Length: 114
Image 1: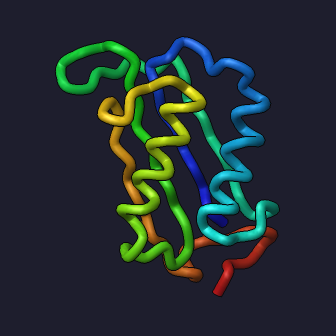
Image 2: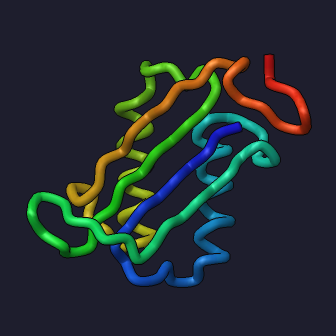
């Protein structure tokens, strides 16, 4: 059930459909989860600044059951490289926030994962 959310002040996402497919596969591979459970949400054209500048910037959130913290540094580097490559936002122009969820806190198809 990983959810990957990208907010950015970029007016549009170049080739948005391809970005969504690439991001979905990236997250599934990165977390070793079935891609059928991955959700990707992208919010372009946000009113945003980072470090006092409105140059291209963003904010990334990664939610997953039992995400833990032991790989946050590895995930941060990989996500940074992915966003910098796909959206050309410099790695020092966005934060990555991790949200580890309990199975009971995530539901689909009328039931939780617990």
